[in-house]
Amino acid sequence: MEIQALRYVVTLAEERHFRRAAERHYIAPQAFGRHVRALERELGTRLFDRTSRRVRPTAEGVRLVRHAQDVLARVDALREQVRAAPAGASDGVVRVGVLGFGAAERWPALRDLVGEQLPGADLVHVELDWDSQYEAVRDGEVDVAVVHDVGPVDGLRLDPLLWAERVAVVPASSPLAEAARLEPADLEGLAWVRPVGRHPGLRRWAGPAMDVSRRSPVVRTPAAIPAAVATSGMLGVHGDPARRFFARPDVRFVPLAGEAAQVSVATRADDRSRAAVAFRQAVGVLAGATPPGVVNP
Image 1: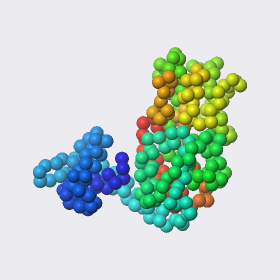
Image 2: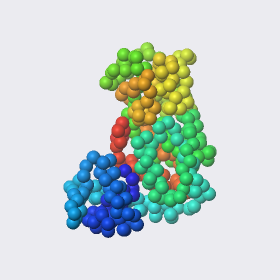
Image 3: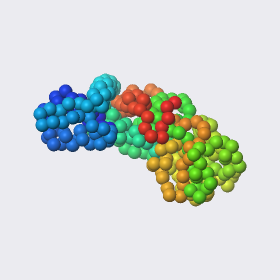
Image 4: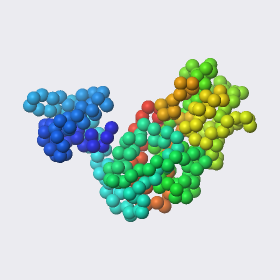
């Protein structure tokens, strides 16, 4: 759901007329109407009743308008806070480190909110692995990063963005592939693909995947886990969005008991640049939503 689409809905609710609402945004009524209809399709509900003479919000439309007004007020306030932050040399180009699926389904909303606060800025993707995800931020290789938050790090600020249910990645041919949920007792004695990272919190989160033999494959990024499972026939551990972002026909993703994977936005603790403030504020807006495969802390 784009921020601009919310602005269109609020304006239409105020004007109750497509042409007048479109004029306030300096676009053609036909284009304005397409944006509103696209939002209705996205939400799966009608937001406005239309006749030849008037436009009136439905009950669902009224609820959305109230929510949109609150969100837009927060976004506008965020923009003012970002403008008040000191300009940085990299504000025109923001290097965004990303581990694995990163913000998952929240990427469009995160990008939209940051763009509202940093108009004209280019967000440049920088791939990270478990071993480098924190150091890349702390050493200035990236300006911000979307990381697998496995615990605090000196010198960094971590703003939680989402919590993803833990899943086991299993070969499609395995009897475990048909399980509704796996418990520790189901996995005793099985071999695992091992994630590699220097933070001790990764061992706590990965659990049995860290207690492996020397013959276990080693992976440095979440994206590599499904391929390693398919190659070795062993098991892997991941966050639920992997089933959508790293799907393969030869592996399955099965809910696994244990700690959810926390995804956070990492910035240097002393960074007061516009880019850092923009990402922190955007996370504050998004953290309350719950997309598919995400659990509340």
